[in-house]
Length: 240
Length: 85
Image 1: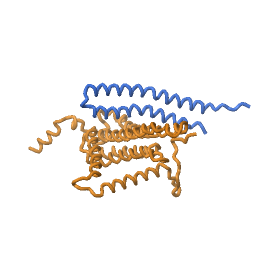
Image 2 (image 1 turned 135 degrees about the vertical axis):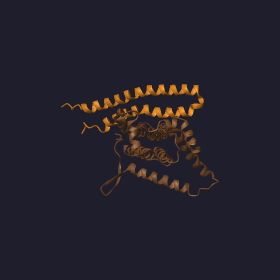
Image 3 (image 1 turned 30 degrees about the vertical axis):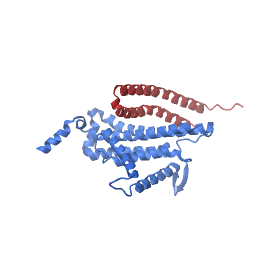
């Protein structure tokens, strides 16, 4: 019988708190990513070498994705969005290491990531529009929509969680089933497919987080971005 | 003596299979239509391929979520069934 995907293996306990396998893997990934980030950005120079050019390429691509998806200046969001993407990507691909289950294949890790996005939507929305301005976006386009908008806030976070969990977990599950049926080299094509799914799911999770945050920013002032005159007005005011 | 038939487990397995099968049916049709429409759009307007494929990925993820919901329900029925002790 294959282990239930809804339960996690307890590795050790600290006092009354059981520490499960996904938690250990998550902390190892966090340490690895943090150390890599510290070591790779230690000596940045104005004339970049090969290593710094590669890093700048990654940061540039993320920045450009934020700009084209959210249609805002990417600077305040690149730390959050970039970390989210890199963490989910390394978490999904950590199944390549033998004996390691990706932490995103367990519901708890995905729930944590989803709750972070849930909080970030409120944080960025309130920071940009103010508390009252953000609350007013719930009454867009009419007051009748308030209950639906509130429900939507929860359901889209829930679907974000379940989507990542379902995709990664089903990949791990299919490989486990195939490994129990067939021999050594048979699951390799499916593992390659799993890599693709992992990358696509990391991308989709991040893009959806960006779309949700972007909608929280722009819902209050819908004509600011579709209307090209908005920037002209600003210039005209400066001239006055 | 006859062994007791465990109807709850039998029904659980059959309904899990039905949930995944029927749940994959609709999203498969929907994804096929979405990809066909995106191909059509890229063929008409190749310079918009980047935007279209990004939108396609996001849309496919939305459609696929329905199938994933069914998979999660099937797994709940198989592994965390509240009616099986």
